[in-house]
Image 1 (cartoon, rainbow, N blue to C red):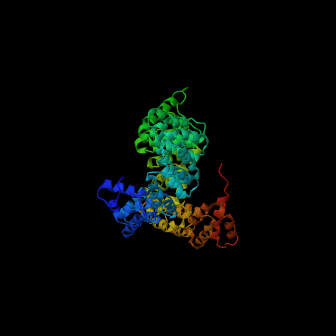
Image 2 (cartoon, rainbow, N blue to C red):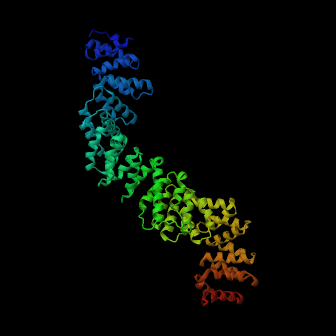
Image 3 (tube, rainbow, N blue to C red):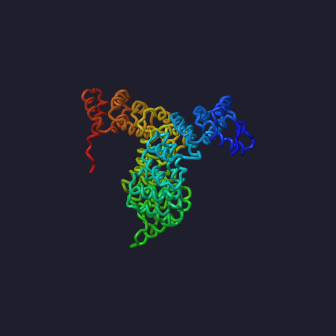
Length: 573
């Protein structure tokens, strides 16, 4: 090779420049090295400076290498990139200083260093393996990234798999990338590791197989029937790259597994491939329906499979609602010749559908509040408590249901989601339509929150009879006896009856208020107060007996005795 001058390092002839860099990387004297260092120091951030840095670095000039590493954090992107390229061309002499720089807590710098070392021409595999085994966490990340480019080396792949034991999420991601880069050669090693690895490592290696795709298909389908639980748990979802009919049927078969997580993984596969799987799912469900209607025919699907198939369809409820709701009917909705679903399937489907809660599913759960089975009703309540925060309007509207058990169930739900329901009830007691206002007035009495009292009092002048009645009852349930007693004098007979009933909810604490009102009222207005006392029931017997012993007003005693006798009446035969 011909001799070169230092000026050739910045020659406009690219071939001359390249050859000059190679020449001076291996053949430079002390004087030339000193001159080059002086030129570098005079303007290190220039284009020429980065070229000089390459030659200096290859000749083990630590200061030039350190300056390039420093420039990796420069705010000027162009300087960063030139520093990266310089360090890549410097090669092995820059590896140790770069590794030392990982002590700086900077994730961006760390990945830049990993990229630089990976892109170097020569890789010290033994050094990288040692870093992976016993280095600091940043060193392990770099080693993993670099080793990803080493192909067809079983030792490297085994070391990468072993490094999964570090339980470092960031490291796991890089290991997955590095193993995938090795292609299908990694599959036999993964198969061996599957014989003795924990659930976490299994899940990571399953992700590798998913990323490899078709070459991993045979191993993944074998895992579906493996006696090893962790393999069965992760194989279905790892197969999501395959959407052919045969694979979908295998996944549906795996829904018969007794392990919840196996079924969940299979369901995730079906949701991921729902566009291709929906036809097969609906066909299977239809076959189940037909076989259920035919005596002596064994159903082709288990209840567990139906649960997960419905759950998969619910992930796109708008498209498949017709097929979903067929399996969520009440007994009275089942037509002649159809078979009602079992209570256990009702429980199962309610739980499956509720994860994709919408107004239609909420309305179905509301209907099941009247189901004849206790567990179906309680399950519906629990699911509405879990998912009902966004459906308060639907719940309050449903309080108009004529069935007492439905209303009671809704009240339980509203009490348990009070943080979402209470403000809605107060607002709509003022602003809602007639039905919404009296439903809100009704519900507020069950909330146990006295801050609703001012709004309920304001509703006593509402133009709707039902709103006024429920406001009175709710005031009683909230213990607002004084305001209710004050209404008795001017109320008509129907309203007096409602107030008396409301006062009955106030309990024994309101007896003193009623007793004072009885003594203060004119003789002809004492009867409704006495009736209100009767509504309080035997809970006031002790207080009543005490005042009877000292009361001197004959008319007041008359009414108190009448109240007392009301509690002691024998039931009619």
